[in-house]
Image (cartoon, rainbow over the protein chains, first blue to last red):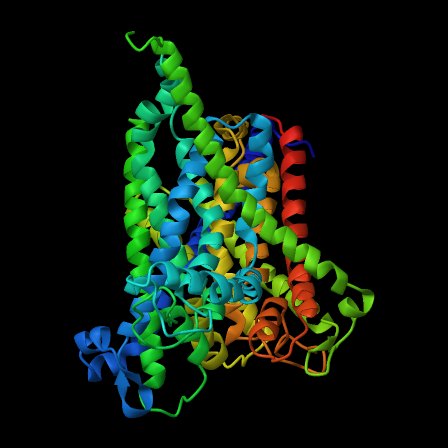
Length: 327
Length: 289
């Protein structure tokens, strides 16, 4: 039997309709699945916050927040949970590390992006990526074997002898496991990170700015100082803040060299006990002590909130910096 | 010019001094770090031998090899890949190709960015609470891999999204104008084109996971095990944790073994990094745009 032309057209149309419907179904399913896939990691962030909050809740309920944050006595077996020594320890190590690392990293990035030959750039850039990827325990080992003895035998005695009047350089801690050691190791770790970010920030300046500046007779140095630098200053600061947050949250390398003594330090040769080290060293031990588990989770929550604050600030500053460039 | 120097000469000298100083600082900053790494490689090299790579630790880790730690890190890296790669790439596809620019998408982005900023030790605590205790997986390869996956996800998502966005828009326009649906366009055109970039991002993410200690501290790493793990529910030794242990908690540890272990861990990371850059440069030479 031969189909009439109308029948054939009907068949074709039906066929096409089926194909279209199945395409649409596949399309909707793909869209839905991908949406679910992207919601999950985002939801994880919220879940982490909630889990920390719930498990830190018992101690937050029983102790006053001020008492926890400003208490300087840490004797869990007597029910005293003061976080101040740990907050102070984290701050000392981080700030000192950033003093070592931030200025040189930024200058290094400026040199790389504005002056270095293309071959130098092609060589240095991957190297910095590799340095940034080196596991923190490797830096920690170097700290234990090289930096700590150096601080103990050379730097400590020398600075104590030259500046006996500066309390910053005096300490009764003779071990070398100190804030200075922690900050040195940490500085070496964040340098590649800050260089990488600063380099990206430098690249947001359009070529046209350089060309315009050079065209009116400025030298490359003047171009960098008066045209490029003012444009990227905000972004560079944001990069440093990101580096600070990275340094603040760094755990293993610092923990290995910083001495881990819960006191409020007064000298760069004192031992300190950063928040991250508190968690890593103590979790799983002495869990029978009431509120101990909760106290450690509260310190994790505190750590996370501080780091978040840094990150949000950096993200806003970076966005403002890049938005101005695009405008 | 009363000083006898022309203006352009002064400018030239300022420039030379300025850039000279910058170059000096740059050298002083980067060189020592490279020296540190070179020093560790040089110190570790004599420890590397077939016995060291294929043997079990002996004499309280002070002798013998590190095979269980090497295998453990391989297992953990593979386990992390199983969970984080499909999820990460899927999320990146949504964000790059499907997501409308609205508040919801922005919220997701902010959450993912912040996920990337969480300190690694906090991931460890979270993994302990959720995977080890709540889901009762115990301290195991599975729990540690899941914890590392959460940490790796943001890296994979952001690098994959960047790779997807790098495919020129004309590819999408042409594909759609030929009658392909969006999903067909993604699967047949965009994904193949961005695959090298995505693989590079995945490797960089996994490389970070392989070197992390803090997240596996409470979730799956063991101090010492006489046997290799038999299932994903067993705990395992791992290179970074092993290095941590032998450099802080074992008195009288031979320095050579410490440097040797560090070198093996370093090579792990270096090899992954080199593979990533080879893929990247080959793809760059071959790409269509």
